[in-house]
Length: 249
Ligand code: SF4
Ligand code: SF4
Ligand code: FES
Image (cartoon, rainbow, N blue to C red; front, top):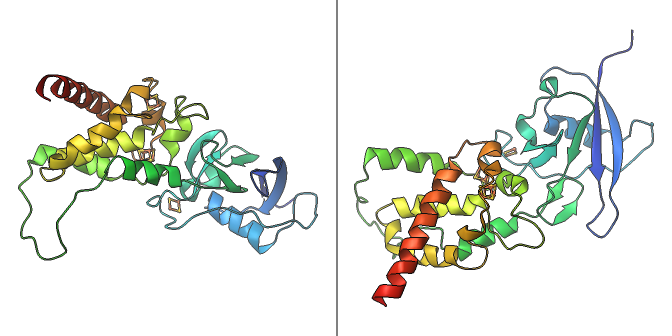
């Protein structure tokens, strides 16, 4: 009887300017393999299913426990983290593609820096005026702490942008993750002091008005962040700011 194997079908591309192609690999079965450990097997022995020597597949990963978001890719048609995609739970051949909404670097590795640029554009941090001991922070109600905890789990993985029809080559929409962080920062008493700057970014190009309310983002978020709550709330904050700006400036 033949030894059991795991078959992978990987979309490969040396760079964004080169046409993509599919390459298959057959790895000896081991229980508990995840997609990253399978890619590591290919790196150890870069030979494709036809027995031809090939280049090792390039990807990005870091924490290996679904915390950093770096290993996000499209596996069997669903965007998710490769480190927690167990081969035992995936129908074969396992198809693996890079995310399509970010510039491709090579093979499965994409450049997610647009998300970090959007976070900067939307002033998504809480400003302090020095590194000395500022004393205890303001008291925060427990309901606010619970909600903030949900949003603080965002790992900038990009799943919500990949699944969003409004994020495409014709739009500058920043996507749900950034809106979630605007909502999070505004909940903190110190963060709320700069919420107007964040809302300014949300009112501009690529802001919250570009959301089409398709709700795909909330379906795919691996951290189950209630993104649509943030989108509705930040949309309301933007409308109130717009009225304030008209009548009080
Ligand atoms: S609700 Fe729809 S359009 Fe809005 S961010 Fe989520 S997926 Fe995109
Ligand atoms: S909101 Fe969820 S899907 Fe979007 S980047 Fe954060 S963790 Fe990933
Ligand atoms: S390696 Fe960090 S989420 Fe997978």
